[in-house]
Image (cartoon, rainbow, N blue to C red; front, side):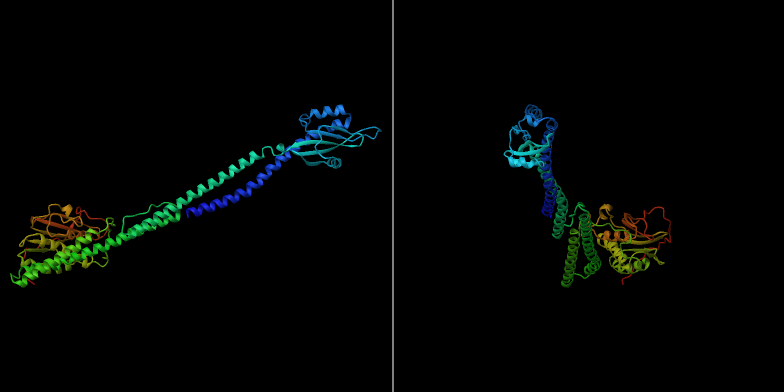
Length: 469
C-alpha cells in the first residue's frame, strides 16, 4: 500500500508538472524573443526622424551611431536612390539580410533569419516618397537571453514538487501502513495465545476503529477464557463437598482391605480434583474484569432460610459422626436474598467444608443469620485455631498455610456476596476460632460496610447435638 501511494503521487505530480511547466517554458522563450525584437524596433524607430528630414550620408551615419544597435555595429540603413540623374543608393552599416528580403521589407516589416541570429527589417518613408529600410541585427544569444536560467529554475521547482509529493505520500503511506502492520502482528500474536497483546489506537479513523474493535475483542476473549476457567475451578471445588463426606465415611469403615481401597480411591480422587482446580487457577488470564453487582443471574433470588436448613441437614449428619456441636440461629422465618439457590448452596458448602477440613474432629461450629433493613448477614464461626492471615486467605488461589486447600472456597463465597453489592470479611469468632461474615446486600447499590445498619430479627437458640440422618 505504501509503494502504491508513492507511485500514484509520483504519476499525478508528474502529469501536473508537465501540464504546467512545458507551456510555461514556451511562454518564457516567447517573452525573451519579444523583448529582443521590441528593443530592435525601438532602435529602428530612432532613425525615423532623421530619415524624414534628410537623406544625406553624414547626418544618417551620425544618427545610426547614436543608437545602441548602431554603436554595436548591429544596424544598417538601406536608402534607395533619388529620382535625380546620377543619384545612387545609400548603404550605411553592415548588411546581413539578402537583397530580396530588403526589397520585400519596403512593403512591410520583416524578421528574417541571418547567420548568427535574426534581422529586423523596418520600412521608413522618406520625404521624397521613397521607402528606406532600417536593418537591425539581433544575435541569437539576445533572443534566448535568460531562457536557460528560467528553464533551470522551472525544472528545479518541478523536481522539488515531485520529490515533495513523493515524500508526503510516503509519510501518509507510513501513517496508514504501520497501524495496519501492528494490527496484523497483534492478530498473529493473539492467535498464538499471547492474550495480553494490544494495538495502539493510532492512524486514520478507520484503522483507529479497527484497533478499538481488536482491543475490545481481546478483552472479551480474556474475559470468556477467565469465566470458563473460573467455572471449571468452581465446579471442581464443589466436588470437594461430596468428597469430604466420602473421606469422613471412609475413615469409619475400619481396617479391612476394602476400607483401605476405598480410602485410597477417595484420596486419589481428591488429588485429581485438586489438580484440576490448581491447573485452572494457574492458567487464569492475568487481566480479568472485576465482578460487578448484578453479574450473576440472581433476579429470582431464593429463601436463605430454606437453603441453609437444607445444607445444615446434610452437614449435621457428618458433624454428629465427628462429635461436633452445631448451633443454628436466625432461620426460623423466610429470608429472601438476591442470590440464586445454587450459588448460595455452593457458598455454604465451601464455608462448612472448610470447617470440616481445617479444624479437628469435635470442634463446634455455628451458623447465624441476621436480617437487616438493607442486607442479610450470614455468620459461620467455629472454635478452631483461626486463620493467621485473613487478607491472604481472601485472595483467589492463595491457600496460605492450610494443608490440602486450593484457596478457592472463600473466593467463591466472596464473589457471591459481591455480586449483590455486599462483601466478605474474616475475623475472630466468639467461639475462639474463625468467623466468616458474608454480607449480602438487598438493594445491590453499594458494598456494605457492616456499620450503621440496624439488625432485626436476631435470635439465638441453645446449642444442640444433631442426630445422624
